[in-house]
Length: 588
Image (tube, rainbow, N blue to C red; front, side, top):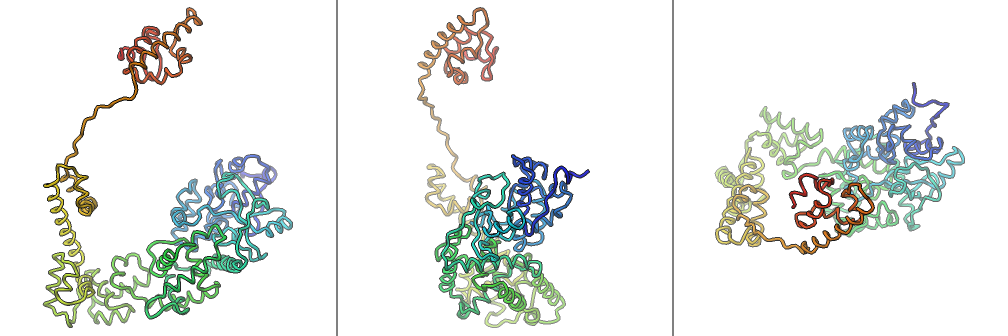
C-alpha cells in the first residue's frame, strides 16, 4: 500500500531546476502543517529529516516514502542538491561516498570531508533568489521556489533578468534552522556592491553555471590545473625565462578580487599581498591538498574570463604540457603511488626496458618523455641497478661518497670535501639502490647520539634542579628527544619530588558547626509543634533550613551537627548523601 494517497496527501510536481529543499517547503505550505516536524515525519519518517537546505540527509527514506516519484537517491543528490556543484571538483569515489552519506541519517562530517569547513569560506551556503524570478514564478507557476543554479557558491547574479541575487536572512544563519521556507521579498537582502563590479560578478556567475552544467561533457582533472594556469600566465606575459613575475601577478589578481568586496561569501579572499601571493603559488604547483572550488573558480575566471576560453586552453594544455612535464628528483620521491595513469604507464615501460637491457637509460627516458635524472630515480626506487658512464665523477670518488653517505655525513660536507655540487651528491643519494634509506638511518642515529650525550651531561651537572630547569638550558635538545626518543628521555629525567603541603581551609568549620547545630535545634522545635505525634523526617528540616542539604556531604567537619541530627531524627534519616544506619553513626 503506498505511503501517500493522491486523495489524502497529494504530492506536488517538481518545477524546473528546483532544489529538494524547495520541493519539501512547498509540500509543507500545501499541506498546511503548523509544525515543521509533521512534514518531516511524513516525508522522511524522522522529525529532523531532510531539513538541511544544501546537503540534506535521509534522501533514501524520502525516495522510499514517495515511491521514487522524484527520482532515485543518486538522481536527487546529483540534480537537486549542492552536490551537483561539488561533484565537478571531486573524484567519482568521493561523489559516491557523498551520495551514500546523504542517503543515510547523519551528514555531520560530509562538509569536512569535502573540504568545506577548513576552507575559510562560509560553510552554511546562504539561500539566494532573484527578486524578478520570484515575481515571475508566482505569476506563471503559482509558487516562488529556490532555483538550484542560484544556490551554487560564487553565483550572485541572475543572467536571465540581469540583476543581483538576494540573500535570505533565515536558515543559513541559524534563524529558523529546522523550518521550511520559500523565497520571500521581505527576507531577501541584496548585497551592496560597486556598479563597476556588477559585470565582473555577472561574468563569474555565468562561468560557474556553465562549468557545472557542462561537467558531463568534460571531466576536469583539477590535479592538473596548475599546468593550465602556468600556460595562461606565460601567454599573458607574466613569465620571464623560467620564473614568474609574482609581484605583477599578485597585483593584478588582487585588483580583480576587489570587485567582490561587497559579497559576504567571497570577502575572505581579500587578504594582504603576501597571503594572496602564497595562495597563487600553491595553485601554480602540484597540489598537496584539495582547495575549496571557489579558489579555482576565481583564478580561472580571472585568467580566461569565459568558459569557452578556459575549455579551449584546458584541452590544449592537457594534450601537450601534461605529457611533456618533467618531475625533478626531489618531486618524484614517494609520488609514484599517487601519480596519474599516464605517469604509471611511463614507469612500467621504464622498468620493462631496464630489465630487458635493450637500450640505455637515457634512450628510455627520451622515448617515454621524461628526464634522465627522473628515470634514474625511478629505477633506484624499484631496486634496479643501472650502468653509468663516469665523467668528472670517477668511480673511486663515487665509492668514497657512498661510504660517507652510509656513515650519515651531511651532503654539504661531502660536496665541500670533493669540490662538487650538492646536487651531484643528491643525485648519487637518490639513484643508488637503498642508499637514501641507509643515509637517513645513519643521520638519525648521529642526531640521537648527540642529543643523548648533551642531555646526559646536563643531567649530571644540573639534575638536582629538575627537568624544567634543564629544558631552559637546551630547549632544542629536549624537543628533539621528546619527539623522536621519548622513552629514553623519560627514563633519563630527574625524578619529580612530591612536596606534601598541608591544606589550609579558609572556612571556620568549628564556628559553622555550632551555628548550624543551633539552627537545627530551633527548627526541630517548630516542626515538632506542627507535626504533633507524627515522625519528623529530614526533609522537614530542609524546609526550615535550605542550606542543610548542601552540608550533609561535610559532616566529618561538622561533628556537633551530626550528633544533633542523630539525636533528633534517630534512625529516620533517608537521603542520598547519608544512610540511616551507617553514615551518621560513622560521623559521630
